[in-house]
Length: 344
Image (cartoon, rainbow, N blue to C red; front, side, top):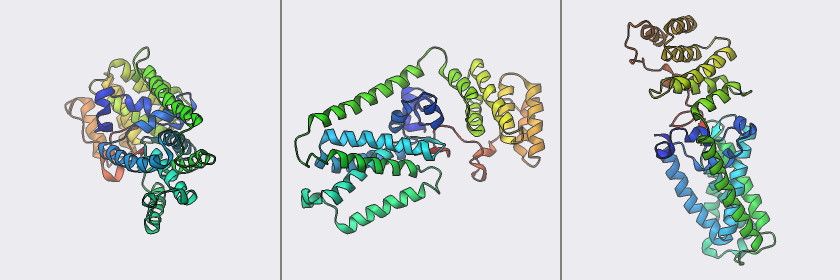
């Protein structure tokens, strides 16, 4: 289930155009710094973050007011993605960094402005200790569990604390919201709308977005061979892919094979699959033969060859070895649903 149905509501390319990618942001897709916070990888991810946003957001808002809380959220969103860009080279989605930014705001208020808070708003010290321990555990797990973007959470937390410190330096808690804070909150809202609009314009721009995006990745320096391979694979196995899209996938697959020196059977298989879908059976057979040489004990590649020669029905693709637990990182979705290679 990709992204809690957003692919069904907004089209299957919503993640492709909106997720955070350091390479694509550096190439000009600045809107991804914002839109990535609005996307989620799967329903549980969405519901957990929604619950966290409601609980921690309310805790921050009752002390800071709505305008300053929005400012903290904007700072946390930028901090989370900026930290991801510096420390990660994988895709990131989710509002978790914003939630941690709000937690950073609550933490700062507790330590720096505890005397201004009503007693029933404050954390009991044992609870505060558990919160700090949970935060440290989350950040640490991010370095061991590929799906958790601990770096983004850390960046959001620090940005939320710093923003709260700046916003409360001269304006006491409980004071009427100032014009500057309201103006800054309006700027955060406007930036969000502009980012969503920019992504929408890119998505519905001239020509086929899948073709444009694949061609761009095929030419963009620094894209990992695995990412090129994954994009090509999921275009190749999509029954609705057009001939033009398959030709774009061919560019991706050829570059992935070239970058790995034709030494990775998985990538050779992707290239062979694209060639087969284009109707180039002879080329597909020659390519899959190279994969068989790389991994002679893997029956999957021999079964692929039987498809390409007509001994096996063309639509009867053998189970992908990349989906086996021991090989789950060899062929990954570059975007959701529910696969490794995406940080949340």
